[in-house]
Image (cartoon, rainbow, N blue to C red):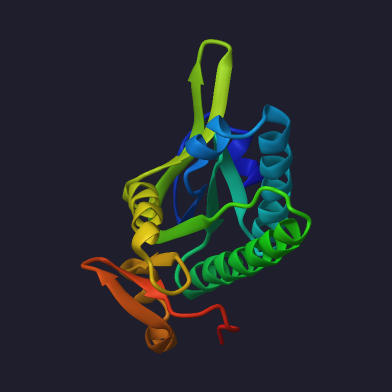
Length: 191
């Protein structure tokens, strides 16, 4: 990833895009002080980014309260590490939420969407502003799947079938959610 960000040319890469978002963030922001929201968001982002980085992912960008991350690599490895990161993020989120609730602090819910595919990665420039970006159908699908996690019944981690196709042993851990995606049934260790 470092070599990509240091060049002006875009490259095509396989990998998994992760989109994670806090539920009803606008409503939370409108009904709580700026300090309360900043503390919640900073704590959340710090913990989630550490898990993403530890599992081989790179945060592409923050979009307000949303995290867009990329797990580079072809096939099984990137898919497995992205699902593991999502699982650990959700577990950590539940732990943080329980601690915050016990302290009468503001809590929130999150959803996560994952999709695998060929993406274009590179630096986009407009005058003096530049930003590393990953674009392609997998990114759009990951964002769509995160939105579908609102209707999830299990883990609220929605995984594209392109990810599942790279992991033949994971089918039993998934529940059909929509035509092109499934939901991770539980947050137990994935083998």
